[in-house]
Amino acid sequence: MTTLSMPEAPFDRWLAAMRQRHSRRSFDGQPLAGEALAAVREAVSGWQRVEEARVVVLDEAPETIFKGIVGGYGRVTGAPSALVMIGSSDGPAAQTSVGYFGQAAILEATALDIGTCWVGGMFDSKRVNRLVGLESGERVLAISPIGTARQQVSSAERIVYRAKRPKPRKPVTDIAEGLGSAAWSAWARAGVEAARIAPSANNRQPWRFRADGNSVVVAFDGPESRFVSKRLDCGIAMLHFEIAARAAGVSGAWELLEHRSDVARFALGTA
Image (cartoon, rainbow, N blue to C red; front, side, top):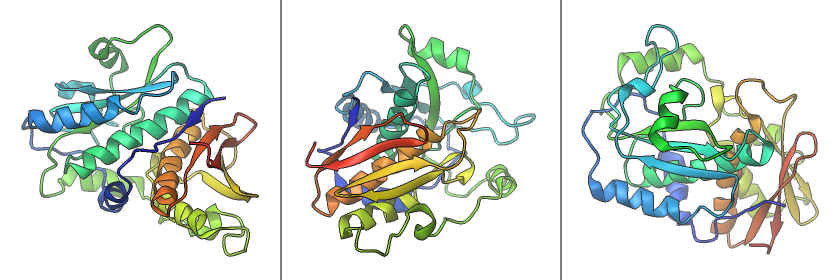
């Protein structure tokens, strides 16, 4: 069984990064300082504890690796570097692990005042594959530009965000069954609140949490998507949940599940 945990994460720092993170697609084109890239790379290398996923820091990211929706519409511009999220396969464990570790890299970059944006499909996969050098059986599941975001949100960014018509954040009672009941401990409620603000493809927020004794199970709603993995989205939310739980003084780890829509169980004291 694959287990995911982040026992040495800077919880308070990442909690702040969760609240300030916004997706950005327009950057100033200037290379990041070597110290900033080194800090992200060093942090990422310390998290690689499972075979299913890894994150690569691409120092130089040609702008042509990012695709727009139609005729360049929605394209990332001016990003000097990128994060590349790689799965060992296209299976459930790889999808969840990529979301989990990829968001760790995103939050670390955010804490360093580096702009980011999850990109799940609009990139040149063949070119990215050549740049990172995939191992046998690996696949790039997502990337993120990293760089200094322009101070002003560009008109192109405003158009694409408006076109997506993001849904407001779902109430916590929609994503966690019976959250106000005694079955939910204070640390678990804090975890759900943190998961609620996690990013997801088209802001669909597919994660659903349920209390199960002393543990919490996360599942996704409805059938799995053909285009963007709901398990990857749940992996992102799982990291948010764990960071808040650990900041509340609770230790534990996620045990990955592959039964129908169940994704993982956060079990106490297993980290």
